[in-house]
Structures are given as C-alpha cells and as structure tokens.
Length: 202
Image (tube, rainbow, N blue to C red; front, side, top):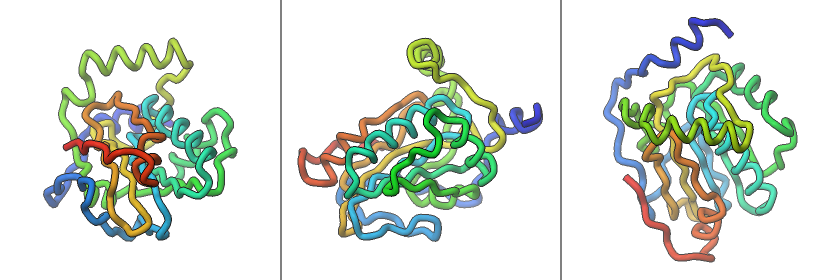
C-alpha cells in the first residue's frame, strides 16, 4: 500500500449516468451481471471501501448472521479491487471462517452499486461529527480501527437489502451516514416473514 493509494480513496468517483433511487420493499430486485440471485432468500450488503472500520464491523456482523441462518444466502459486495478485497478479508479476525452461504463479490466499477441506487455521497455523509465520534468508539470499544486502503472510494454510499425467494425486495437500508451499522437479524426476519415489513430508507 502506498501513500498515493491511500490518498486516491479521498477522490470522489465520477458516474456517467444518474443513479436511481434505491429499491423499496415491494420492488423487484435490480438485475446486474455481478449479482446473480439464486432464488433463495438473500441478504445483500454493499460495503464501504476495504479498510473502513464500518465496513469491517458490517462484514463481521454479516458473517455472524450468516452462521446462524444457513438456509439464507448472504452477499457482501466490495467496490475495492479483487486484490485489495482479498488482502482485506485475510486481515480480518477469524479470516477464512466464512460459512458457505456467505459470498463476497467484487464490483470495482460500481455498476451493481448504481443499479441498487447507491451512488456518491457528500461531505456530511462521510465526515460528520457523529461519524467521526463513532470511529473512535468502534476502535476503543471493539478494537476495530482504520486499515490501509489500497483501492476504493470513501465517498461511495453503502447499503443493505433483503430479497425474498421470488426476487422481491422486502427490506431496504441504504446508508444514511458512513457510520451506520444495520441489524441483519432484522433483515432476515423480514425476508423470512417473521416480522413486520421494515420501513424503507431513501
């Protein structure tokens, strides 16, 4: 990892096409070449850049939820490069312990991110006072700090969604701030029909 690689993560990516609104509960799941839904209930999370402590916490939570729900498919989507994503995964606690219903996909061009309504965010999303405080608390309380960022953008919006076996979005949590960590157990409950339909977020 070089200084220039770290610096480049602060440059906002440019999208040639406008990004649609994120899908809401009841909408059909967007179709992309990167994400092939299997027909089983699926929880998807689109991560911030590899190296972000919130992306790490999100992935660790997703992994734990996947272990508890083996009949549900879990997808983690990274927009960092394949090499950077692999290196990041190898550096995480209990690396290699992912259950076989959890899959990591790479969408370096952010085509799937855009199809799911996740575009470039502004200054307040990334560098809010609350978000900066959350970075410190996450490090102090759980030992999750920033790791080197080899590729990816800090300005890419994250988000999580739940899709039922018919390919319909049932749970939608596009991130409202960089520090947001979602409750994947809630998502599983909604997708499997064990809870009321969650309120979508725009």
